[in-house]
Length: 205
Image (cartoon, rainbow, N blue to C red):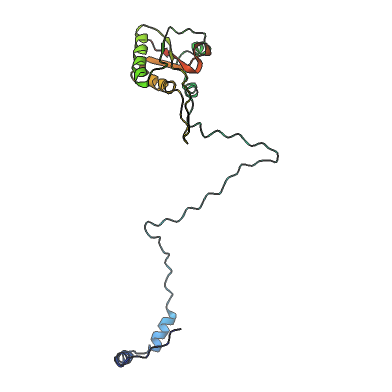
């Protein structure tokens, strides 16, 4: 505890001058203070920019029973559906009976193009020329061969896709100038290449 400091002469004189100006409160003033209502309590408003912390969500656990097997988890590597899965989810635009025969390999393609071994820059214009010429000639079913692609060494944290053309061709067939000419795209039957080729059913020219 700090010791009380002795006032200097000039400080003592200043204190005496202030003390002489002090007047005690009258009894009436004291009575008014006793009767006065307490000041209302004002809630403190949050400072602008201050946000209360969001409570952490409680962990949710699925109920299970003793002896129950764990549910299989989908691998995180499947970041997107395969071309075959994406095409299978596409709406059916052509005749259902003819589509069923086509997917079973019962319809023979009227023309085919083999893009296997080409680069993306080479394959895209060749595909455009082939499809538009086939539609002009009145053909309805053509086969586009892309190959399945060779798996390469993958040492990175993000999985890489094999078969660049196998993934690119369905996109090209939906984009201009081929989109208006194409009615349906489906992965071919095994007899025509399976996952390495596509049936392309064309609209009438």
